[in-house]
Image (cartoon, rainbow, N blue to C red; front, top):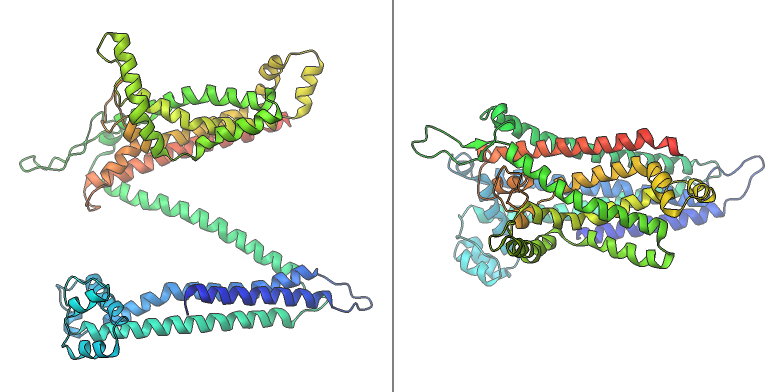
Length: 489
């Protein structure tokens, strides 16, 4: 029984339990002095929870644990001399066994007997069945593959049966105790509370896991490279140690990457903030409903465009255009390269416009209408109302939105790769190429590298540095919003 069928049966049992429990609850006969505690919908929901949740949780745990148990059993079924050999790769051996097991499932009885007797060429035979093998394997792998197949089939069969039985037992438990005083509502609310706590815990643990995974690798990196060389170095040249280099492993200066990250983000914000903020003011204060219903969705379409498309747009259109314009103005020698800080900043600014406009529009619309109407009632013009009343009232929220947008700009990768290049330069000329931290993280983790050399581990140091920067900006944004929000309510 496949996973989808098991889940479908469990869901059907849960729905049936819900309908029956609700029907029974509606037919409960009133008793003198006894008031029904929970509505029929809660009785149905409680029966559905008992029918679905325990069965699904068991089924999920079984599906996670059974492959681990089967792997161990298959490995133990191999001859002892194979398991104790020092040159045996366990993962490769078990993978070959599993491939043989897949091929055995596609053989008929006669072909299967030939394989068991050792008379068949496994590689050629399985190729006719659509199963590719690099070699014929070893003779001991066929019995191990049959063991794997039988255990897998038993696991699938028993897990489905037990999950369905648990679902039926839960449904029976939910239907058997329906009375006027049954606290079904409390039980449902308790389950929902624990579900919300579980979801929050997963989010927190995921964040902690991400931080710890970067932190441990970062500590390993700083065992090879001093902190001062990383945080205060002005040269980024993480070359591998060459013969006769005396063990030199390059230079890992963060400053060129950090400068490029902040420079490109600054150019993007200088372009996105005025356009996005003015668009938000227009849509919230000046535009009619008909215009707003058209302009706002069109602006938000920009947020749905993949960043790689923006990068191609910068590489093919914006970069060459800026280069040609600067060359024409300078008399032949371009002042702006096709791949430059200005190119990446402009295109990234276009991408950020919907973030700024949408967030600012929501914040401006949240300003109490009484402030707006009171200003107009006292004789102020619309522009004076926006400048002297609306924007000051919405300023904390707008500042927070801009900080969130800046953190989005700092984390961008694809636009920078195509529009600004990968050269770790340290310059103040926006017409030259620079790169960012995210680009170098991708570069250092691209290729067949082991996580033991400083050239690879530096990516984790860069990642945790970027994490701290964006986290600080997000915390600052939330602080500003929460501190100054109440004075305008």
